[in-house]
Amino acid sequence: MKIIDTFVPCLFAFKYTDDLPDELERVFDDWEDPVFLNDFFEENENEISITIEEAIVKVKSEAVFLRNKLLELANSSPNQLNELFKNLNNNEYTAKELSQQKARNRWLRLYAIKIDENNYVITGGAIKFDNQHLMQHNPHTNKELIKINKCRDYLKEQGVYDADSFQEIFF
Image (cartoon, rainbow, N blue to C red):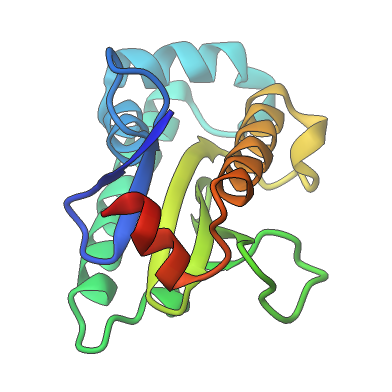
Protein backbone atom coordinates (compact mmCIF):
# COMPACT_ATOMS: atom_id res chain seq x y z
CA MET A 1 0.00 0.00 0.00
CA LYS A 2 1.32 3.41 -0.94
CA ILE A 3 0.07 6.93 -1.52
CA ILE A 4 0.56 8.62 -4.87
CA ASP A 5 0.01 12.05 -6.36
CA THR A 6 -2.98 12.26 -8.74
CA PHE A 7 -3.93 14.33 -11.76
CA VAL A 8 -5.79 16.66 -9.38
CA PRO A 9 -3.88 19.23 -7.28
CA CYS A 10 -4.02 18.62 -3.51
CA LEU A 11 -5.57 15.20 -4.06
CA PHE A 12 -3.69 12.01 -3.41
CA ALA A 13 -4.78 8.40 -3.74
CA PHE A 14 -4.00 5.05 -2.23
CA LYS A 15 -2.49 2.48 -4.54
CA TYR A 16 -3.04 -0.92 -3.01
CA THR A 17 -0.88 -3.03 -5.35
CA ASP A 18 1.69 -2.29 -8.02
CA ASP A 19 -0.26 -4.09 -10.74
CA LEU A 20 -3.46 -2.04 -10.27
CA PRO A 21 -4.08 1.69 -10.80
CA ASP A 22 -4.48 4.05 -7.88
CA GLU A 23 -7.98 4.28 -6.43
CA LEU A 24 -8.94 7.56 -8.10
CA GLU A 25 -7.98 6.25 -11.52
CA ARG A 26 -9.56 2.84 -10.85
CA VAL A 27 -12.89 4.33 -9.83
CA PHE A 28 -13.18 6.64 -12.83
CA ASP A 29 -12.04 3.83 -15.15
CA ASP A 30 -14.79 1.58 -13.76
CA TRP A 31 -17.42 4.30 -14.10
CA GLU A 32 -16.50 4.79 -17.76
CA ASP A 33 -16.22 1.08 -18.65
CA PRO A 34 -19.43 -0.20 -20.28
CA VAL A 35 -18.53 -3.85 -19.60
CA PHE A 36 -17.90 -3.18 -15.89
CA LEU A 37 -21.10 -1.14 -15.64
CA ASN A 38 -23.20 -3.72 -17.50
CA ASP A 39 -21.97 -6.51 -15.20
CA PHE A 40 -22.53 -4.33 -12.14
CA PHE A 41 -26.10 -3.42 -13.10
CA GLU A 42 -26.95 -6.99 -14.08
CA GLU A 43 -25.87 -8.06 -10.55
CA ASN A 44 -27.87 -5.19 -9.01
CA GLU A 45 -30.82 -5.04 -11.39
CA ASN A 46 -33.31 -5.13 -8.51
CA GLU A 47 -31.84 -1.85 -7.19
CA ILE A 48 -32.67 0.23 -10.27
CA SER A 49 -35.97 1.37 -11.70
CA ILE A 50 -34.55 2.12 -15.16
CA THR A 51 -33.06 -0.11 -17.82
CA ILE A 52 -29.47 -1.25 -17.57
CA GLU A 53 -28.64 0.81 -20.66
CA GLU A 54 -30.13 3.93 -19.05
CA ALA A 55 -28.24 3.22 -15.82
CA ILE A 56 -24.96 2.96 -17.75
CA VAL A 57 -25.59 6.29 -19.47
CA LYS A 58 -26.52 7.86 -16.13
CA VAL A 59 -23.34 6.69 -14.38
CA LYS A 60 -21.10 7.75 -17.26
CA SER A 61 -22.70 11.20 -17.26
CA GLU A 62 -22.42 11.52 -13.48
CA ALA A 63 -18.75 10.46 -13.63
CA VAL A 64 -17.94 13.17 -16.19
CA PHE A 65 -19.69 15.77 -14.02
CA LEU A 66 -17.90 14.60 -10.86
CA ARG A 67 -14.49 14.55 -12.54
CA ASN A 68 -15.01 18.07 -13.96
CA LYS A 69 -16.22 19.38 -10.59
CA LEU A 70 -13.22 17.81 -8.87
CA LEU A 71 -10.84 19.49 -11.30
CA GLU A 72 -12.62 22.84 -11.12
CA LEU A 73 -12.58 22.97 -7.32
CA ALA A 74 -9.02 21.67 -7.01
CA ASN A 75 -7.69 24.20 -9.51
CA SER A 76 -9.38 27.15 -7.79
CA SER A 77 -7.11 29.48 -5.92
CA PRO A 78 -7.23 28.65 -3.09
CA ASN A 79 -8.53 25.18 -3.76
CA GLN A 80 -12.16 24.54 -2.88
CA LEU A 81 -12.15 20.76 -2.39
CA ASN A 82 -13.93 21.29 0.94
CA GLU A 83 -17.03 22.19 -1.08
CA LEU A 84 -17.05 18.73 -2.64
CA PHE A 85 -16.03 16.50 0.25
CA LYS A 86 -18.33 16.12 3.25
CA ASN A 87 -18.18 13.98 6.38
CA LEU A 88 -18.80 10.33 5.63
CA ASN A 89 -21.07 10.08 8.66
CA ASN A 90 -24.00 12.41 8.06
CA ASN A 91 -24.40 12.84 11.83
CA GLU A 92 -20.94 14.38 12.23
CA TYR A 93 -20.93 18.13 11.84
CA THR A 94 -17.28 18.93 12.43
CA ALA A 95 -14.19 17.41 10.89
CA LYS A 96 -11.91 15.54 13.24
CA GLU A 97 -8.36 14.35 12.82
CA LEU A 98 -8.07 12.28 9.61
CA SER A 99 -11.81 12.47 9.11
CA GLN A 100 -13.49 10.12 6.67
CA GLN A 101 -15.06 12.02 3.81
CA LYS A 102 -17.23 11.43 0.76
CA ALA A 103 -17.82 13.32 -2.46
CA ARG A 104 -21.06 12.45 -4.15
CA ASN A 105 -23.03 12.99 -7.29
CA ARG A 106 -26.34 11.15 -7.22
CA TRP A 107 -25.32 7.45 -7.38
CA LEU A 108 -21.54 7.97 -7.33
CA ARG A 109 -19.34 8.23 -4.26
CA LEU A 110 -15.66 9.00 -3.87
CA TYR A 111 -14.30 8.13 -0.44
CA ALA A 112 -11.34 9.97 1.04
CA ILE A 113 -9.51 10.87 4.20
CA LYS A 114 -9.14 14.55 4.89
CA ILE A 115 -5.58 15.42 5.85
CA ASP A 116 -6.31 19.12 6.26
CA GLU A 117 -8.29 21.89 4.56
CA ASN A 118 -6.34 21.47 1.34
CA ASN A 119 -5.36 17.81 1.12
CA TYR A 120 -7.36 14.64 0.68
CA VAL A 121 -6.36 11.02 0.04
CA ILE A 122 -8.80 8.94 -2.02
CA THR A 123 -9.39 5.46 -0.62
CA GLY A 124 -11.95 4.24 -3.16
CA GLY A 125 -15.37 4.81 -4.62
CA ALA A 126 -18.65 3.10 -5.34
CA ILE A 127 -22.04 3.25 -6.94
CA LYS A 128 -24.56 3.70 -4.12
CA PHE A 129 -28.26 3.53 -4.82
CA ASP A 130 -30.84 5.86 -3.31
CA ASN A 131 -32.44 3.18 -1.16
CA GLN A 132 -29.16 2.15 0.48
CA HIS A 133 -28.69 4.33 3.52
CA LEU A 134 -25.89 2.61 5.44
CA MET A 135 -22.70 1.51 3.74
CA GLN A 136 -22.46 -1.71 5.72
CA HIS A 137 -25.81 -2.95 4.36
CA ASN A 138 -24.49 -3.46 0.83
CA PRO A 139 -21.49 -5.63 -0.15
CA HIS A 140 -19.82 -3.16 -2.54
CA THR A 141 -20.18 -0.11 -0.24
CA ASN A 142 -19.25 -2.17 2.83
CA LYS A 143 -16.02 -3.08 1.02
CA GLU A 144 -15.31 0.66 0.66
CA LEU A 145 -16.06 1.24 4.35
CA ILE A 146 -13.52 -1.44 5.27
CA LYS A 147 -10.94 0.17 2.95
CA ILE A 148 -11.40 3.70 4.32
CA ASN A 149 -11.02 2.40 7.89
CA LYS A 150 -7.91 0.41 6.91
CA CYS A 151 -6.39 3.48 5.21
CA ARG A 152 -7.10 5.71 8.19
CA ASP A 153 -5.44 3.15 10.47
CA TYR A 154 -2.45 3.01 8.11
CA LEU A 155 -2.03 6.80 8.21
CA LYS A 156 -2.22 6.78 12.01
CA GLU A 157 0.37 3.99 12.18
CA GLN A 158 2.65 6.13 9.99
CA GLY A 159 2.29 9.01 12.45
CA VAL A 160 0.09 11.17 10.22
CA TYR A 161 -2.21 13.54 12.06
CA ASP A 162 -1.98 16.76 10.01
CA ALA A 163 -0.56 18.21 6.78
CA ASP A 164 2.99 18.49 8.12
CA SER A 165 3.17 14.87 9.26
CA PHE A 166 1.60 13.80 5.95
CA GLN A 167 4.26 15.73 4.03
CA GLU A 168 6.96 13.92 6.01
CA ILE A 169 5.81 10.47 4.91
CA PHE A 170 4.72 11.41 1.43
CA PHE A 171 7.57 13.59 0.17
